[in-house]
Length: 217
Ligand SMILES: [Zn+2]
Image 1 (cartoon, rainbow, N blue to C red):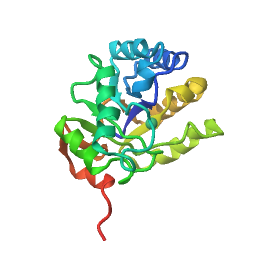
Image 2 (cartoon, helix red, strand yellow):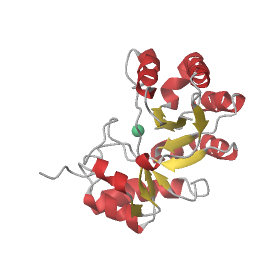
Image 3 (cartoon, rainbow, N blue to C red):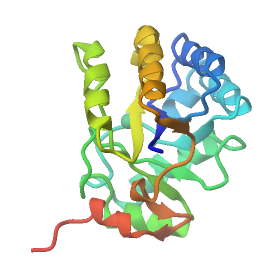
Image 4 (cartoon, rainbow, N blue to C red):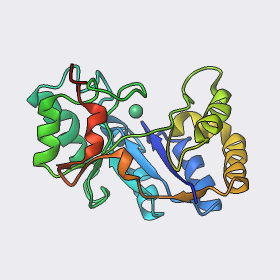
């Protein structure tokens, strides 16, 4: 049976993440929230992450500032700040596998993590999660994510879908339709991640790490 894992990135956002959490609770869906440290530190951020955690969602590290990807500006000091500071901000909420997802505009490749970033994630035993379905809900017209996501489901045995609470909160009707469509297609909604999107497990790089390394000439 094909599977799909929901992930919500770049939050939390008061007024948006709450609505997404209400929706997920209503549908009994467990997801992962890849949070930005600065958003946790902002007013209302930590409380939303605490709520998500208490409702069974995974809280995961998605850098402190969501700035230049760590593969393009990833010296030791910046890596430590972007990843380490966020880990402190989600203290007590982070999943035991210490999930981290780099940012980089939806594309996979060496721009996501510098060698120093990879070394840091190994030393600190992170589990690094990528994606395979990024339908661009942050781009106008925002509603187009729906058709794009459906198209990319075709032939996929385990989809890791990236949505953004900030945007999807205004399109919960579409999210409802999407969930109905998953059910109609016999796609199981799960919370875990496939090996193909787990590039590091508790500090150990996996064969999937190839998607983030430069292609050898
Ligand atoms: Zn992001």
